[in-house]
Amino acid sequence: MTGHASDASMHILINKSEGNMDKIKIINGSYKIRGKDVDLAGMVFPLVEGFKWGTKGSYVTVDGAAVAGFPDRNIKIMVPDEDSYEKVDASTKVTKREETDEETVERLRERFEMLEDMTRATKKGDVRSMIVSGPPGVGKSFGVEKVLGKHDLIATLGDKPPKYEVVKGAMSAIGLYCKLYNFADKDNVLVFDDCDSVLLDDLSLNILKAALDSKKTRRIHWNTDSFKLRNEGVPDSFEFKGGAIFITNIKFDNVKSKKLRDHLEALESRCHYIDLTIDTEREKMLRIKQITADGMLNEYQLGEGVVDDIVDFVDVNKKRLRELSLRTVLKVADLAKAFPDRWEAMAENTVMRRA
Image (cartoon, rainbow, N blue to C red; front, side):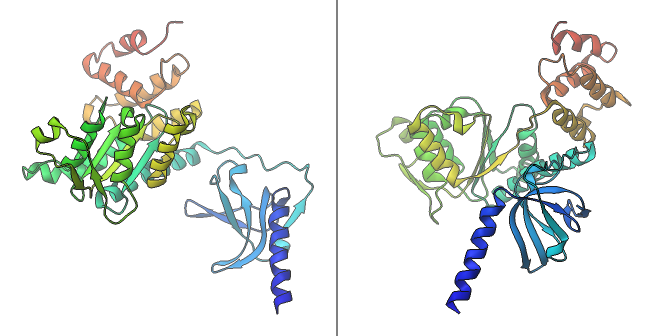
């Protein structure tokens, strides 16, 4: 019996070792993409682990990140049996597949819907904190504030104090301590939007680590005498039950100070991390089209067809724009609202680089 177990373990180890270099061609297999079963016959993937049985049937594990349109992780391709795929020569190239515009839009939509879902979970208290990273102008703040604003509308109508606040700009460590105290109750959320001073200061990071600790009780202390605390009636110790969201463009891996990097890694280990990086011009433009179609400019109440004209203007001139982002779309919408008859000429001189 022991011998069989040993042989099985050895077989699994060999499979994993081979999986690092082998490639397979799918003969009969499928994978569910956004709820639809996609036939993968003829496609070549890097093999991660060979044929196995699971609760949902038999499968083979491959590297999905190697082929466009699949998740950036190892995925299980459902196959009827071991003859449903074959190993191919190491020189065989992985399937080169171009993601359609519709697939890209849905992939981006899913990622930003996850941001909204995670914001709701933070508000509810199921998630304590998250870090949202990505380039400026892709809609990080828009998604978070949209969710929290809807939740806070009831409190506003009932003449109750707000249960969330967006903190921007600079903040000292003692200012952070006081702000956390003011929003320490359950279902309160603090959003630090490009407030990078709290992420680049040792004392502030120590306070945040205490506030977001994984322990059941999160107690924060300020152990030095402070006129500000006495003046504002803030105790030198309190329990924090709220949530926190950090929206930042900082790449933690690029921070040069090892001491600071260690602090950031400790904070990151306490938070869920959502990377909303959009790398290509094509993806940025598709994201702009998607979010404007979803109603981002509705509040402007522009004339019929003007929103489409704004998106077309951005698309046609994307190579010459100072920045291809949602912020640029909002700037152009501002001009269309203020100067309905000559917004394009105005935009040419404000959001575009000179030829």
